[in-house]
Amino acid sequence: MELRDSQSLSGQAGVLPTLGVGMVGYAFMGAAHSQGWRTAGRVFDLPMRPVLAAIGGRDAAAVRAAAAKHGWAAAETDWRDLVTRDDVQLVDICTPGDSHAEIAVAALEAGKHVLCEKPLANTVAEAEMMVAAAERARERGQLAMVGFNYRRVPAMAYARRLIAEGRLGTLRHVRCAYLQDWLVDPEFPLTWRLLRQHAGSGALGDLGAHIVDLAQYLAGEPLVGVSALSETFVRERPLLAGASAGLSASGSTERGAVTVDDAAVFTGRLASGALASFEVSRMASGRKNSLRLEINGELGSIAFDLERLNELFFHDHTEPAASSGFRRILVTEPEHPYLEAWWPPGHALGYEHTFAHQARDLVEAIAAGTDPTPSFADGLQVQRVLAAVEESAAKNAVYTPVQAQTQAQAQTQAQAQAPVQAQV
Image (cartoon, rainbow, N blue to C red; front, side):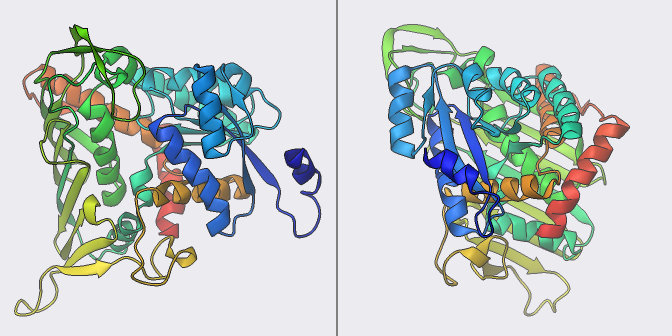
């Protein structure tokens, strides 16, 4: 009743129109996205008020518990019922990659806006289908965005601003590493993230998608070719006993084959000729969620460590050598991206805030009718890089060009990037 009343008042002065959100998936990412949707309208002055209308999942008891815990008004056990609900205007997809394409296309065809977790899909073909559906939906006024939340770390958005302003000059090197250790134990069970049919790839798609996107976002240009190696260090694991929760699970006495990579390393070349290197692993003992990157240009450098996510290190190479060097910028000032609505300077933000920023940006784009970023076309570009990495690794590191975008896709991606560059 509250939702109906709010919608009936939306045309009155001073009352915001609502945006009914329906989310498919309720585990790790479901909880993170729920936090973002709950928080965004309470922190930022949004043009629309997000309403947590319904959450979906196959396990009836679990999805009802998630709805109660995270503040969703209703629960559905079939995603098809969720995407056709009248009180849902936006569908947020937080499921394993094998279902992204089917749900996203159905939601767009049902007249809904879509937010889809990364990576966009499990294959290039699926991602291309999603982009085509998004382009058709855009003509009807529906918008689609892929959830690369690390773009919404204020330090990363500020780094993009520095690079776009030319503070680093011509870029020379990009270095990225994303390391975790939750698979070091060979007895960790065979969850869906370790099965190609569900996850698409392993550390490459799970972690590599993030740093490929960050590299291209920060540099403002795509990767055009890669040379890669990958490895599966533990090839059999205990079958899953019961449900998994986040990155935790229990196993049975039976074992099954791991069908994705545990780690990958690859080098790449950006369109401008700058060189890039990447490392991803879920077997790096002692590293819980370590994402580090550094970009070097002719005029300066930036460096970032996710474990110190409120800090950006910047080197201005135009300063006198006697006094120059990396300096620490505490990215908590009101002038920094997203910080105008948060706490006084020096009061740090965390991982969960990136999802509130993501929700804010998408709501503002929907209200304005502008293309949100990263777009499905951006997600497709990342998928093409991941596919080239897998192809190169299968050929023992043979240099492999990244499949080129069509002219129309490149134009769509460039248009989608423009609002982000202006904003940050």
